[in-house]
Image (cartoon, rainbow, N blue to C red; front, side, top):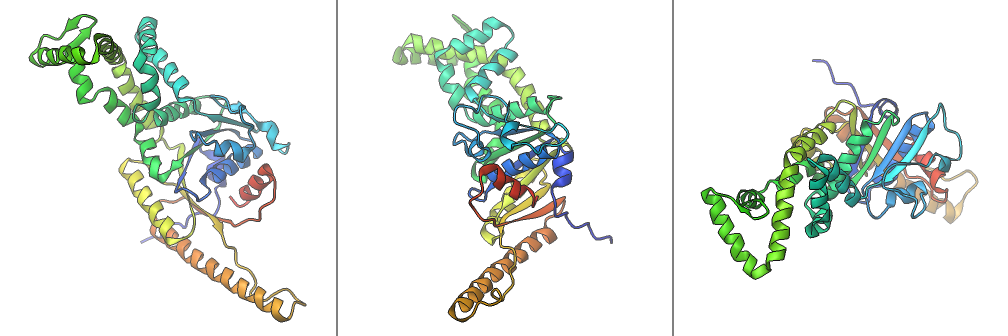
Length: 369
């Protein structure tokens, strides 16, 4: 039996050949910083990169040095922040999602007519639902990813996702959007309501119509009419949403998409990362790379030459502790290499000194990718 090839220790092929890199990982492991470093590295190497964030806390924008108010709703060119050293027409753009604007655009694109779109967008329930409907924020990020992925002016999309505790909601959002728009309550309401002033004629429709009329006496006819009008208008979109959700889901499974998990080399984080990898596999999404961040690179055990006495003892003790941490992390990373099949790369980024400016720090990280 042929041994499977060992994963590479670099992300260079991924950064230079893939169309989309999805960065995911537990909270606090430096995932957003790594996504920014990947984007800067690829842009400096000559690729036209769009770095996308759905994090309202703007951590990715802060990592890239994007000023408040300059984020924009879609990718905008920030190559100037790199301070030169960009090869072969490389470019870096950055975008943060505006879910409400994206949802409105989708409604206008998918409605059967401008009148139907206006009816939805003017409805009193629309503003609430566009920001709170289950999965809408995540779904709109995937819509934006799907659109930018098809933009011939963009060669690589780096997508920073929420921590693992929320990321599964992100990846299942197309399905949940369809479920929300075609759930049991919505189906019954559509059967009961065929448009303004019309009630369904089948048994379920007549029963639901009677219930809705009774509700109207308690909620007020105006609110009930708003609800029914909104449901009726959404029914016009449901087929489009269902088809679009399938397209968006398929965009995550293409061979040009790579999933990169970011972790720290400790057993609890690796367990969480492994569980997340297994959940992704259940969704048909394969992990291509793991980046271990803030790894302790081994030091020489002995203190610097000429250092003696108590100072030498302290340095020797600190070096021993550091090297023990490095040994334990190395064992964790080796277990991942041995046990996780299908990985193209396992990369270690060392714990780096602070004090550099943002772009300089990202370049320092990128050098280890």
